Image 1 (cartoon, rainbow over the protein chains, first blue to last red):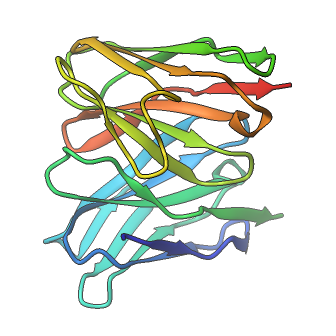
Image 2 (cartoon, rainbow over the protein chains, first blue to last red; image 1 turned 180 degrees about the vertical axis):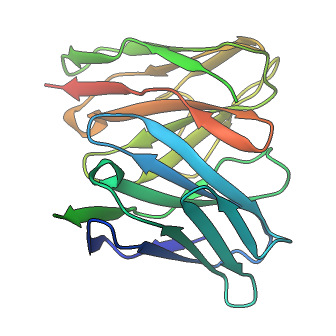
Length: 112
Length: 112
């Protein structure tokens, strides 16, 4: 079945860039997503990328997709304390008729 | 995007009882889903709530344990039946809207 892998923790200094990586196995993935979950809160859809794109930028967020290697990354520029959260990578095959397959999430820790 | 609300936000239940969780979307959506997030874990898809027909369950989840209703395009319920402590989790509903799945705030269930 599909599998999505992420590192469990990432520690960065405030003001630096954070790069969160994700690999997936499903070659039929059509959309790939990044969600943010703050402590005690629900999931916030941050951004997504369609599988025929290789990059998407949205303010401080940059998503890179290497479809050949099935590798997705999320770069957060100028990381702030408010970026401290768990970041989930998720993928979907098809046009939205299926549920998402999530990675285990990466805890982003911000050092002052 | 879609705005999704869930009721209750949390509950503490006794072993052997059942709890029904409600999910309301602020607009009509075709696809609704139910997920479970066990403590410290990622999200796992329970089922797709199909309007006008039976829900489609993922491997490891069955209708007798997690009956789902989807009476219209804005509302769904998930019942957790005959609960045991292993059912303690956050239960989240989501809706497909545009190019992404948006999530409700979740229902935190504790079974004693």
